[in-house]
Image 1 (cartoon, helix red, strand yellow):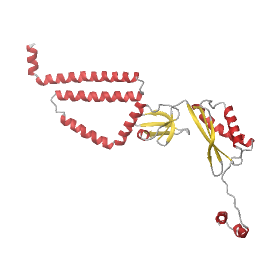
Image 2 (cartoon, one colour; image 1 turned 120 degrees about the vertical axis):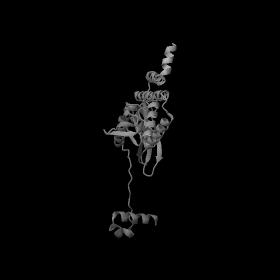
Image 3 (cartoon, one colour; image 1 turned 30 degrees about the vertical axis):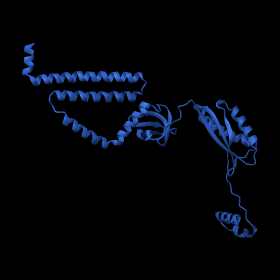
Image 4 (tube, helix red, strand yellow; image 1 turned 135 degrees about the horizontal axis):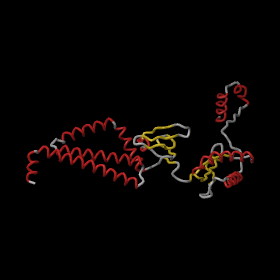
Length: 289
């Protein structure tokens, strides 16, 4: 044993090299082991695969960097200056890529908190579409008119995210205007009968029908019905068509804005020779007079 210690004492640099190699080998093994353990734990927690891969790779890279620095320090190579250079380089890269880093951080938040998943129809950053892929920097959406949108994650996370498929049911809202001369009781009965007979409208929560506004040209009726999420578009378009048809059958008028001109005898010949806009101005003047 004394001969072995004496041997390593004579070859002091070789001893440090062997220790550094041991640190490097064992450190690489531990880094891989810890990364695999984190990957299994995150997979069991049902975290998105993209987040699992990113966190695993990031953890492995950090651990390897620490192991390399420890090995270099054991060889007597000064690492303080190296760390300072790496820090300065990291700061410069961070300033140059601050937009990408913002997207990176936003992507991690989206993946970890799972505000939406692949296949969800969402509205975010002023656009709507079905989520195809959620990457670290961008999210890919597929619109209903067959367009592919690449949206930066920072724009998504910084605004309101609307997930249209998060719940099983949705409420469809309609506003229908009827004439002041129409009987509101008849209008209500027609709407209640139509909605009750619709096979896709849910009974609970109960539909709502009520006067929403006494507008300038019409009495606005608010209609609110609950439907299954998959039936929302069918009910929205189909019910509007059925309302128009049943109103036509029973003589219910859906008014639209119009202007009636009253021409006085004193200005009859003058107004008749004027353009349409000028006639309206003359009539308005006479009305106020």
